[in-house]
Length: 324
Figure 1 (tube, rainbow, N blue to C red):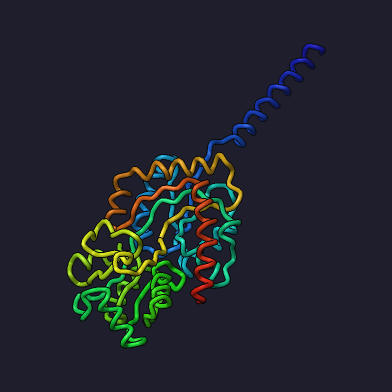
Figure 2 (figure 1 turned 60 degrees about the horizontal axis):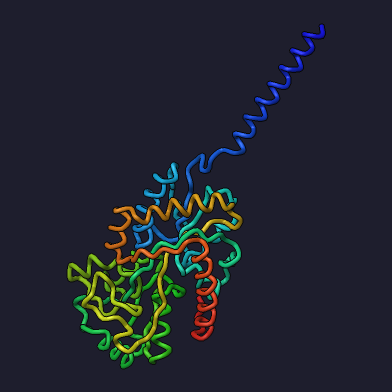
């Protein structure tokens, strides 16, 4: 009887140890165990979507799980970011957006605080922007369009992604600083903004250059000037605003965020997967086609950048008094 009791006790101990081991393995399972969902805060077909898709494909190979894209566009990225804020910080839902989501909290009511409600994962792109007109328009230079807009108040309408986007802020700042009277016609993304110009519904387009680039190269559209301090890599013959005496620069940048509270291990897994994806030939090629410049900032550098950008935009937008 004593021997039998000892065997039973030993069996119970072994069973308990096995169950503990299984439980421990489940709790220590290596991230990720299932596909990762990305909330894309801008519409399909635009410059951001075109560059992010190959980056996500490359990152999925590195991290070992599919990275799926869910489009939740609207209000310069604030719709998607508002949704991201509600998600669990388990690494299975992240988001990609632009600096427009930073701008939005200063021009309209949004359901998040960009500096407090998210985890910064990585910046991956800066984008060339510019002012484009139809090739059959009478304006051959930026100065000609500016002179016309001054002489004909309200007659120049320009399409752009939103009032809070960097290209629209550039146009608003030019208007305030130099007395240029032109009117913004906002659209949900770059693709419909280009379509509006091609259809003659507006006189100009102010946004990223990836969308209109094929039409500029084919001769249907004309690029008058690029925004920022340097010329766009794909259009070295076109002057930048700074060269023309208009020192206005609002950069367009693409970021990857996670919900607030991502663990250090999950954050590093995501960061390293996307960082490795920056070397992918398909991603690099997509950036070149879309006039997007590969620009890397890791989690800490991105967080510092977002803090500075938020403070800067708050002051700039206050001076311009822009509200949607």
